[in-house]
Image (cartoon, rainbow, N blue to C red; front, side, top):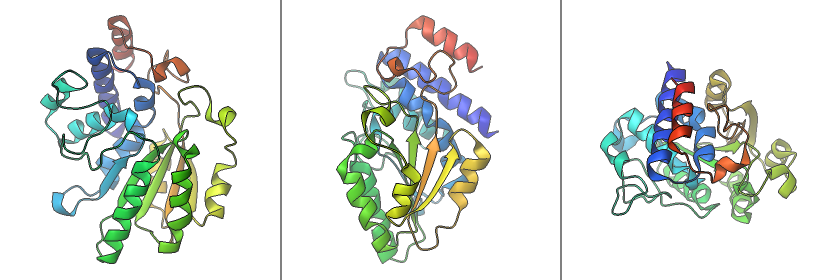
Length: 259
């Protein structure tokens, strides 16, 4: 079932990218399996007033969140028709005034992560069972603000906060591991006091187990090894799909693969 949901979300992303002639389709496809597991298995969304919070800190992949919210029935699918068009409904980077389930305005990398930490701290202070989840990009982890939050969160014992790194090893201008000293990622987070778990970000069993793992009084980070453009063979692990436009022919080929 969850695999079919992910395919549905990926098809919607392709449709949105084609209709809008907008970029970031590869970034959006890489985190779909993580979003499907969160929204359809792990996160509490009902009652809405007591929902868990999800923040897409790598907000240039907004198509992935919009498509997931529509698949989950949190937003009307008709809203998708207004994605990234003049006088439309949904912008290419997230704006929390536009739709239900868009919890924060984001786009400048490194911000959503720390907003989420603040929300988690607030829930802790209120003794609320609500949890906060955020997906950050691997390139985004080069931002200093990420490491400021990473230093402080264990001090606050934010075991209600889970960060997921969408580690597809491709950012706007190349591979994250080549552009900046990156590894050992897991050891870095553990040294900061986090419960760190490394997984295959497209394996639902591993995703589910990591989400359910008890962080024992610490914040948790899941390092999800993913593939940019996942699900569409000619897009997979190709840098050009950070910015490349989905033409009608690309759309036809992609939807055939995702049938």
